Amino acid sequence: MLEKLKNATVKRKNEGKANDFSPKSLETIRNDLKNGHAELVIDAMLKEEARQEIKKIIENNYAAHFMDYDENKLDDVYEYVVSEIVGTGVVERLIKERPDITDISYNGSYLIVESSDYKEIYKDTDHQITDQYITRLIQKFAHAVGKEFTPKNPIFDGVYGSIRINAVHSQNTTGNSTMSLRIVRPKLALNEENFEMFAPKFIYDFFKVVVESRNSILISGETGTGKTELLKLLFSFVLFEHKAIMIEDVPETHVKSLFPDKDVFSWLTGNGVSVTDEIIGALRNNPRWIMISELRGREAYEMIQAVLSGHHVISSLHSVDAETSPKRLVNMSKIGYQVDEKSLEEDILRYFNFGFHIKRVVVKTRDNNGKPIKRVIRYLAKIVEYSIDGCQMVFEQKYRNGKFTFSTGKLSEEFYDNLAEVDLNYELPKYTDELANKKGLVIIR
Image 1 (cartoon, rainbow, N blue to C red):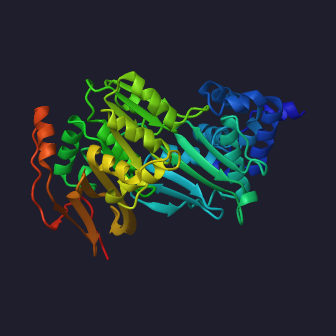
Image 2: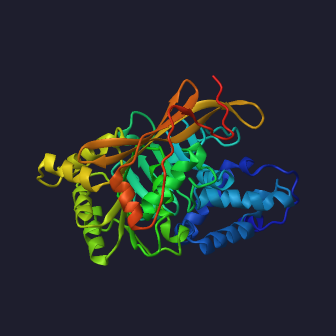
Image 3: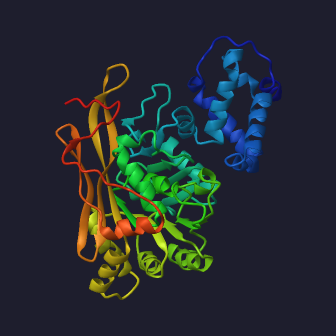
């Protein structure tokens, strides 16, 4: 009798939304599939073929649960059910429907979504986000990469497709479980078209000649300021003639797919291999460039040695400002090595060329309909040129009282000599407290 009910052909009565699907029916289908098709459910997290097979099973065996949906809405409902059972539910839908989203987090109370332009609480009256729902979602991510998320394994770090996830179980929080997702897409979020929101156009030209003339660069800034996106933009200027090795913990830069015509090795850490191991290995591959997506500790020492051996480096790190970055490298090196601090800092100032510092600010503006909104602006705050005599300001941008202004300093004769060696020219324009033109941005107060 039950089998006949599952396969019954029924008349659909209305055009209900996918989110209206009965939670009880969803749980019934989920439990049946886990009991009868456990391996297929796990495979469907990563394999599209398995996902489509799950969808067919639902279509063929559970028609009675979809009786309230009109024919032209039915496929959307099936996709919703599949995403809830074998996909990542609301996360999957948010990523699909809102391609500008970069971060999704759950703080134990509500879901927050962020893009390069905004941060807001996710509100969906049709779908209640509960701690149970979030915990099940985290467990799906964990199972997909062969890990567990339980009171005995309360911290989960993982990468699933284009998503990097960190979660902490309620066992180790003061309330519910928490979760942070970073969505990384294979595209240049910072590019020539939108660059003037970040810095004036003449800085884009400066970046190009700085990379083509092979200068070592340190990118600093707080979490979420866009250090990786700047690194990707700088990588776009690397010439084919200059072999590059990209080293990262998780696949964030997507340099192989973004720049298929460049000579690039893309390496990931893990499985017992550290950033330090890969920097040492990189030196045996005859690269011109070694790029490390983010420095966190003792690997800074090996990176410095790579620069001292004639290689060129671009890396990001957390630092208060560009001037402080050399001292940060010294302190990170001390985590794993005994060093002469003064001598090492002098080497950094002598052989690293530039420091770029990024900031972010939330401003009040209006959307296309004139509604007041808050928008996140990431901007280049400072460029300094390093030398044994200290740090020389090349460019500085400030946000004060609702306005962005910028000033320029100067570049060294050594920099211009390096440009001449590779037949390049660049003239840094002179500005003092110039009002920045950020097209389309009208700040209200």
